[in-house]
Length: 383
Image (cartoon, rainbow, N blue to C red; front, side):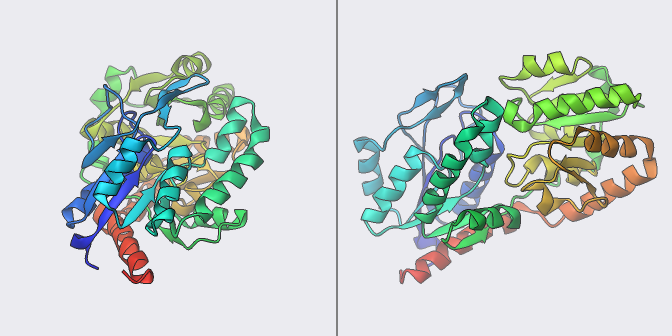
């Protein structure tokens, strides 16, 4: 089978109604597949006010707001008859599911009963979320559910070796490949640094800007970020916090980091400017499977201090292009940031090493890995 013969149905819980790293990767993938002649159709909940235009053919699936204060997200509780009819008419060779939710399970069941190949991509460590919302006791149950989900498909791809090892440790026996992530090097590079833009936010030219990049939600480790900033202040380490992003926890975060400059959501080249204008990216999240923000900072020659967790360990060589820290060790985070703030030679060396490492991550080659995995899956099934 050639790429131009292939029809792929992709199921997403959020393809474009709220911007995040997972759906950015999916849209990039769909763009690559279409350019290679693959016929693609995406099935996802939608809204009347999407965050950005979708890439490719998007079919709306009925959904309800997620309860518990996260109504910006939606969940589809079934695979309705209208969607099934659309799928049957599309007649895909592969059903690709990107979220371990009810819609994903139903799509897998639909495909399995028809002998259609199934493919899953891992984007988020959902089993880490309960701890941030006071229901950590649910994590073992979630892991069992996730293991079952990934064992129901013919092929799994994860963003890196660390997440592949995590799935195997749970007992996932389906074949696991790697679908990494890329970066736009024209957009993310050191030349985008802009001191005038920093000044417009009240960040002085000589201030050491500790950056946060991402949605302002608790599971991004905002509590640890705030505690580390307080520790830096107590130690007398001069710094300013530069927050790129927005989200439901903004007010909560602003109360705990009162000296922060909030730039809000940044997109396109403005995002590249914002990242390059940091002096360090501080990423304490343990929910990442890859950490697109980490790679974007590296491409801008910005050192990264991150939790020693999945994603970061695939990108950061501790002490070379950043620091890896035990996930909730406030003092160790503060030590690492202080070292970078106080040692310009170390800061420059780590930034240069990060940029060199990031050169290996380019979208076309990375997305081709998924297409190659699709075709290999079809070959294994004798199609």
